[in-house]
Amino acid sequence: MMNTVDPIYTQAERKAMKEALAGRDRLLFTLGCSLGLRISDLLRLKVGDIQGQRELVIREEKTKKARRIPISAKVDEQVVALDKPADAYIFSSRKRNADGSERPITRQQAYTILKRAAERAGIDARIGGHTLRKTFGLMHYQNGVNVTRIMRMLNHASPRIKKRMKRLIFNEEAKQYV
Image 1 (cartoon, helix red, strand yellow):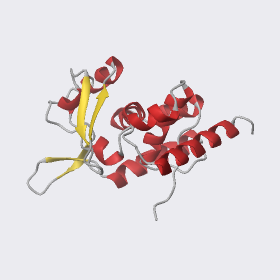
Image 2 (image 1 turned 90 degrees about the vertical axis):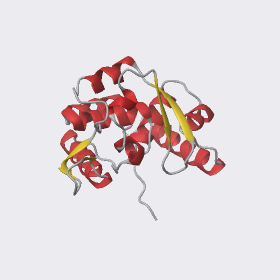
Image 3 (image 1 turned 120 degrees about the horizontal axis):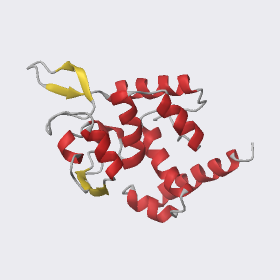
Image 4 (image 1 turned 135 degrees about the horizontal axis):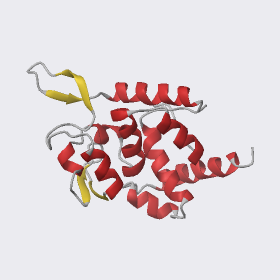
C-alpha cells in the first residue's frame, strides 16, 4: 500500500515552499502545482513540450489517457528562462545514461527535493511527489472550481476518487478552524 501524502494547504505555506527552493527545484514545485500532472509525467517533460506552446498535450503514463493542459504565460516564461534546447529535459539530472545521453531526475530525487524543502520551510505535512498534484486540485477548489470539474482536469472518473477529494477538501476546511 502506498503512503498517503498531503497537499500544501495554504498560500503562505506554498510561498514558504517556493522560497525554500531555487532553480530547477523551484520549477519542479511551480510546474507541479500549475499543471497537476503525476510526478512520473512531470519529470519526463522536455523544454519543447512547453516552450512557446499554448497547451501541453500529453498521454499520461499511468492511465494512457490523453490530456490537454493550458500553459500560462508565466509557466512558459519560467521554462524559457532555463535557456535549454527544446529536446532537453526540464528536470535534467546531473547523472547521465550509459551512452552519455541526458536523463531526467528520478521520482526518488524529486521526493527528496520536496521533502527537504518542506523541512526548511517549516511545513509539517506528509510530503511526496503526489503532493504537487493534490496541491493543484486544492488550489483550484480554493479558487471556486467545483470538485467534479477538478476531477475532469485531473482525468479522474471514479466515484471512489471523488470521495477522497471531498475528504481532502473537508480536511482543508477543518484546518482553517485549528
